[in-house]
Amino acid sequence: MAAKKIKTYSLTEMKDKYIGKPGTQERDEYEYELRMDVLGKMIKTARQERNLTQEELGRLVGVQKAQISKLESSANSATIDTILKVFKALKADISFNVKIENNFVKLV
Image (tube, rainbow, N blue to C red):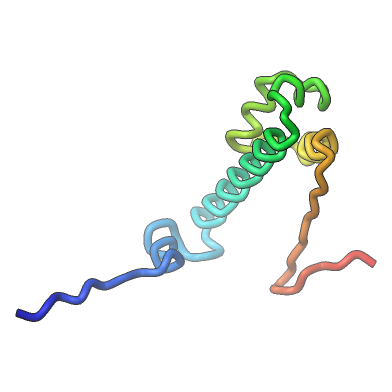
């Protein structure tokens, strides 16, 4: 008896099929939420490496503990200014890339 071959799909194929192709509103929203989730996790990891509580980090930044908690669970509600203040308080460098039509914008 021959074994049935199972069809496999890449993550990109699955996202294209179930979320939408790149450039669609649904896919753009999904990718944005994913990036904000990753950013929140990076903030939490950096805070823990500095042995700070959410309350202590909040004091350094000038916000309430609840805002740090919210930021760590998903950074999508934070302003860039707040995110920069958080990383500065953590003594962590952060960099941004701007990409236009497959070319990274470089500051000179």
